[in-house]
Image 1 (cartoon, one colour):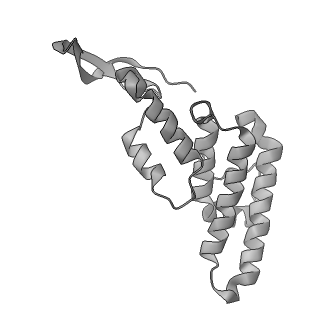
Image 2 (cartoon, helix red, strand yellow):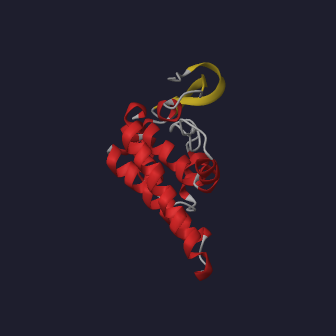
Length: 167
């Protein structure tokens, strides 16, 4: 669903040539709202989209840029959605939640970040594998880590096969 900038709510001071001419009331409800209010921020928004799309999971850029550009970028996510429920996918949806959120961000903001689908999907796989390493870091956890890698491969394969319609 596309969001649009509509009237009322957020007041922004308007000036021409350094002289204040009044207040512009704009509801910053849509992804383009921040860019609408400050055209000079558009390159920064594209840069933020690129950084967040390729960020390693557990990094702080997602949180920082979400606070900085809450409406200029699409932060919606649907978690690790899978078309069917089986115990292994149910368990790993929780494990891979942060990777899935970043992947959703990459899909929803690819027009601003400039990354192609394969790059976003490959970062998704890399992030899930990293989560496996972090979660199962003890040498006794090697069988669990191996199973986690298998689950990451399955999530990645599903995204490559069925994710094109969301791009």
